[in-house]
Each structure stands twice: as structure tokens, then as C-alpha cells.
Length: 115
Length: 232
Image 1: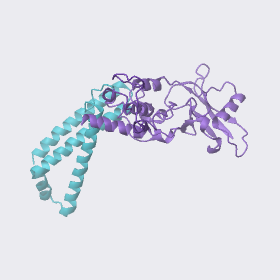
Image 2 (image 1 turned 180 degrees about the vertical axis):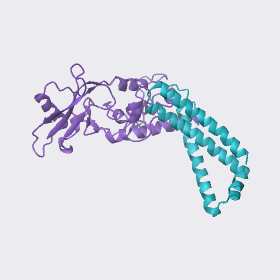
Image 3 (image 1 turned 135 degrees about the vertical axis):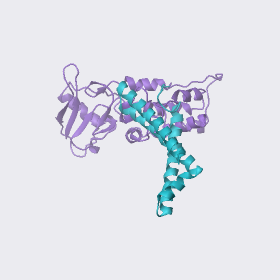
Image 4 (image 1 turned 120 degrees about the horizontal axis):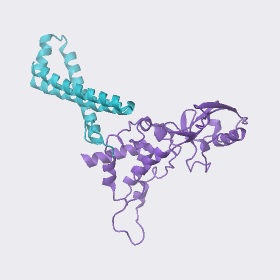
């Protein structure tokens, strides 16, 4: 058993399952957005704002944003543990990624709820 | 046929270099690479490499042969393109020439407790298995620990101290599905971290090089399923 403290999940399986579920949510969100753009034809500001005004879209967008953040945290954490053997560099990188992920999440909530 | 062999003696050489050899091999010869290496050793007695059974059972002569890991004793010369480039197994410290330090590899093997643990009442005679239960061990018990797979795996190169590696995980699964072993849950608990199993990215280098034709990637998939069943 290898101990880790900067990973998102509490076990290897935890990270693994979050990575897969978040990927599915991002895929669904991308397809939904693509469907909207194609079916709307002329994407005006009003149409775009209307889309994001619904509670469904706000929840879906937040879910997608949360997925991006978790996916990035896990993925970049893995990349850093593979390719950054120097402890100082790895730690600074991991902290930066985590802080940025959390900041993006908060920023995203603020933007979505202001519409 | 031309050969280019990795040479390094830490006591006399500042850094490793490639030594060129020439060997007359008759057309259509059924010689193995190990036979050729032995003849090269006649030309230059300082060339160091491991070998023992010379028939693909002991797993001593694993090298990087023309860029792909394999056992020299069961690699026909006729299957190789000249010049034949032989290097030590990648990712492990070189002791001398083609001899590598396998300590890290064995440490991972030791970690998965490669022996049967049965804490139930010992039967009068022996622990029996049905033919079906025994068949589950096929494709797993044949591993000879030559390290060709683990040393072809980038995840093992980057984290040899944390990722168990394809060979160790194949062995881990061999005991996880053994019907006589009672420690399945403890074994799985030991593997459920971000490195031991999950550092496998499924690129299947291990399957590509295994001289015994085994499939560590599949075994790792089975371990993942067992972890999933246990944790969901």
C-alpha cells in the first residue's frame, strides 16, 4: 500500500472511478452543447443566454465544470508523479493545480449563478 | 553478421559504449542469440552477461534485443536484422555490460506475498482443487520472473518503487484467484492505492514482449474488477 496525500481520491480505485465517471459527464455535456449549436442555427446572444438561464443547464454546466476540475486534478497529479521526480517541483506543481482547480470551481459557480 | 553490444564496466569505464562485433553465421543457421553471444565472449572474454538453462526456463538472459526485450536463448538469430543491437534490460541499474541489478524487481515481487496463505483448518492430506479451479491458474503460474515485461513498462521505469509492475501483478492475480488462498481481501486491500495497480495504463508492452506468451494486462484487468467488486 503506497500512501498519497495530494491525490483527489482516497484510494486508487476511488481516483479511477471518478476519472471514468467525470469523462462520461464531460462527453454528455459536449454532445449536448454541440446539439444546441447545430439545432439552433443562428446562435444569438439571446439564444445563448436563454440556454444558460434554465436551472437544468446551470446544474448540468456545474456538473460538467466539477468533472473537468476533478478529471484535471487526477490526471495532472498522475502526470506529475510520473514525470517530475524532483520533490520540490512536483509539490509546487501539484499545489498549483489543486489551487487552480478550486479557484476555477468557485469562479464557475459565480458566473453560472449570475446569469 | 554484425553485432553491437552494450559495454560498461563501472570500475574502468567513465560511461557506457557500444562495442561492434562480427560473426560468421552460415545461411539458414538455427542458432539462437545466446549461442552467438557465447561465441562473442570467446572473441572478448571480458563481455559479461547472465545465462543458465539456455532453453527459456530460468529467465536469466533477458536483454533488450534490437529494441525489444526478450530471452536471448529462445530468440533465433534468423529472426533478427543485422546489426543486432543488444542492451541490458531498460530501467534497471547496470552492474556490468548486460548484467542488471534486479533488486527493485524482486522487491515488488516480494510485496505481493507470492505464496499461498491458507488460514483455515489444514486438511488431513492436502488442499484439493477441482479441475475448473486449477484451470484458473493457467497462464499465470508459468511466469519465470525474467523481468522482460516489467522493464518494458514506462510506468515501472518512472515508479519502480511504487508500481508493482506487470510481472508482480500477474503473480498477485495468480494468488488472488487461487481457491485455496484465504487472504483475498487482505491482498486486495494492499493493492488499492494510486500506484500499485492503477499506474497501469494498459499500453500492453508487457504482453508484446513476454517470452512465455503470458498476458499481464489481462490479469491487471481482472485485479481491477476484483477491486471494483470489493469497493462498490
